[in-house]
Image 1: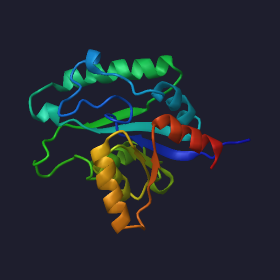
Image 2 (image 1 turned 90 degrees about the horizontal axis):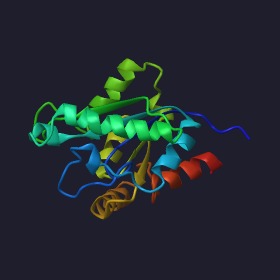
Image 3 (image 1 turned 180 degrees about the vertical axis):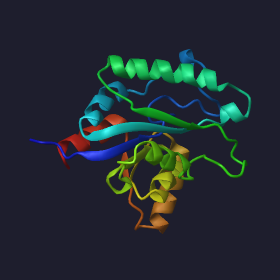
Length: 190
């Protein structure tokens, strides 16, 4: 059976790929911990998406709690381990802006999606997915007209998303317990 091919998968990082540090930031490689099933999920997702891009808000840089070089080291290790497990991440986009900075590249603003589109003109947002664990991730996807999926690892954000989705039932969103569950469903064609 031939799998349906989607265009681009945009993934949030904290709470989707790795364990989120409540109230903190993953500033060093030794603080980065993959969520269960992620290393198995990414090769499955590579089989059905043309590319996988990570889009992540990283205001810890703007707060002076870490540097861009620290973040690059975390991402280098993450991509290495994903590659060793047979997966591939095409590129990582991050926004170091503080939440109150204007203008701002942080999700839910579509700046990182537009940057990706400028570098990969073949990206078709209507045939792409945004997968995240927060309402701002979903809004980023909706702002760019993508399919959206909520990974339910952050109970506070699940509650916010449920409330918004009840009010606006036309907003597209699927919900999954993990990235591996999403990969399994998409690979099954359901």
